[in-house]
Structures are given as structure tokens and as C-alpha cells.
Image 1 (cartoon, helix red, strand yellow):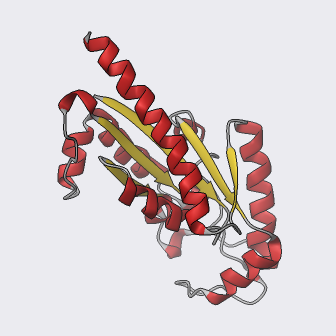
Image 2 (spheres, helix red, strand yellow):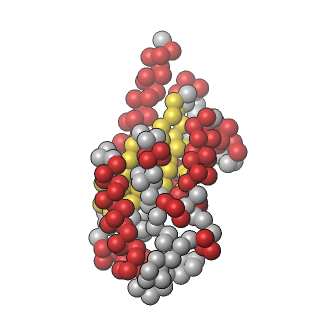
Image 3 (cartoon, one colour):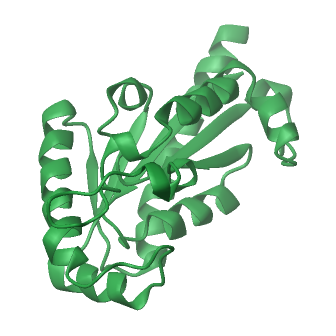
Length: 206
């Protein structure tokens, strides 16, 4: 059994979830763990000097729970898939490669998690497009007036600078390109890695 951990990072509304879901549908024996599922309760998220909730920091997330879930997959991917109600789709035990897709806006900023990735992708879009997309989505709780310019965008720039100081092995993707084009490029890259892992396994057997 071989494993592959793929990180799909990016800015808010950059297309992370769409790409991750599409990859999951294309790749056998894959599953997704999404960072957005691990936000702490709104009541414990601190407020900055401008009155803005500080969601765009690692402290706003239960990273310990997320890492526990990822380590559960790493220890037994097949059992993990079964627990999630996902069936293995391998035709041959010799060719088993399990793929974990980790998706989120701060996945490369958490060093213990970043060290686990075999492949890293980051979706980026321009400021104006990001702001427009963000304003068209409904959040719970909703974004207060001025939140994007006063908090979200400055934090994105800060987090991105920190991310680039932690790792340089990131493939940056243009989130303005057609979704199918982005998917095709990433899928091809991951598929090559899966093929390589399968060849390594076959050579191990022989």
C-alpha cells in the first residue's frame, strides 16, 4: 500500500473546494479533509482592535483535531475510507495508492501539516475578483461592513508571506482559468505521481 497526500491551498473564494471535489471524483481511493470543518465556535474567536473577528489565523481552528483526523487516515487509509462510507476502487491490491486531499486556506502555514504534503497547490485570484466573490457569498456569521479590506485581505497577504517563508515547493495556480483546465493540469500531475508509486510498488514485489 502506498499513500499520497496532496495539499490544495489558496485564498478565500479562490476555487479550493471546487478543485478538491473534482479531484476526489476523478481519483480512486481518495478522500478530502477540509480545514473549514475545524473552525472553533464563534464565541471563542477573538476580536481585533477594529472589532473584526480574527478567523484568518491558525488559533481560530482546531488544528489538533484536524491533525488527528489526518493521522487516522495515515495509519489505515482503507479503514478510514470505510468509516466515511467511501469504498475502495482498486482493481488490484498490488496497485493500491491511497490519496488524501487536504484543502484549506492555512494548510501550508501549519508546519506539522505542511511537512506531510507530497504535492502542494495554491489557487490565487486578483484582489478585485476575490472581493467580488467574497461579497456574493453568505457567511455565518455574515461579514461585517469593511471586513474584507480591513481584515481578510491584509491577513491573506500576511499569511501568504509566512507560507512562502515556510515552504517553496508550491505550484501556484491561476484561479481565473477555466475550472476544467486547472483540474486537468493538477490531475495529470497527481496521476503521474500515482503511476510512479505503483511502479515502485511493483518493483518492490519483484
